[in-house]
Length: 153
Image 1: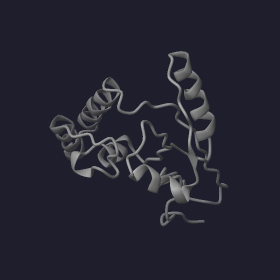
Image 2 (image 1 turned 30 degrees about the vertical axis):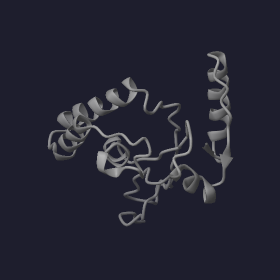
Image 3 (image 1 turned 120 degrees about the vertical axis):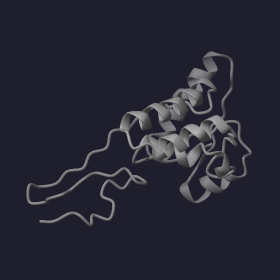
């Protein structure tokens, strides 16, 4: 299943070709946003593609990989006390190095178990004139300018 927007159809077609090379016939079913999340909530899929905007690695890891967050948004139904412990340690860390180390352990485990396979990291851009002060890009649900409460002219 894919969300039929952005670069998702092109990525799905590329993955379909790669899978065909190893003997797997991947059928792509594309849905618009009004149906996609309802469809993947049924958990009746072998694979799904999701564009996932995030503000930090910690944000996305804590949302999708905590055992208690299943079945939604933890659609992989991943239940792992070790992952939960690393997520807790990352959240509680005052030292950025310790936070990064714990989140790296979670990412390594996700990749080692082929739970999610990152395909691409899209670059996004935010432009502003010199008149605008305190503008800071946020990657919260694809909105680069989140609320904009600190922005001034």
